[in-house]
Image (tube, rainbow, N blue to C red; front, side, top):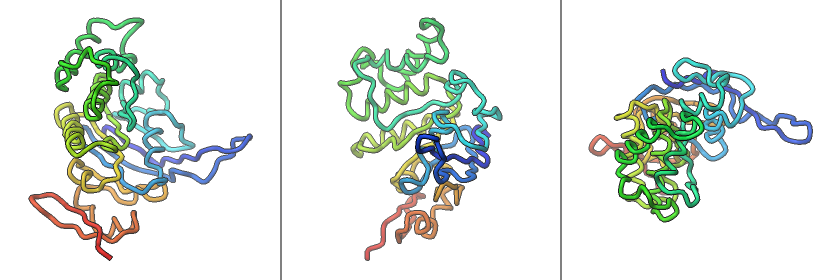
Length: 259
């Protein structure tokens, strides 16, 4: 397994003495392999973003383990972890950097004092593969929402990670750009053999792009597996809503029941 999380516990601290509050992650377990798109599903406040931050090393858990290719990520230096796990944020803000320079920032964990030949070749290759060559010298600020997301994905992929993490990547995108980004997520897993972990709200979009699904409730994974676990019962338990699920051309379509 590329990613293995075992018995992960995390609580935020509060107050002058840093007393820990109620745990946000409560003995969480999950596994995701190379080439798979894993989807985190659950209501706000259930711990999805905290889990992503823990994998990335932004937050440190009280106990448990995060293994990447069998190595303990919690004991890695920041640069070592950055080579293994990269992140595409929900809000893309790279300032006035060009597309080329923005993607180059993804090589920081690999390069020395300045970019070398291998860094430049890696950046040029990923820009070409992502269909961004014509925008290479354009400021990211001038790009559309979908184009910015593609730049953010290119920046993450040029790190040559084993795990690629997205937090609500299709939020605030129109349907065309939403489908574009969903396609890039699938390609990252299939063509590059990267384990992709995505936090999503929209279950229908999740069902379209995911291979493995993780339903979170109160800081735990309460159901994990393929599309077969997306049922009316689990949606009711996690989201508290009644739904009907239909099959069409191999796709699951989830609709909220009319009251």
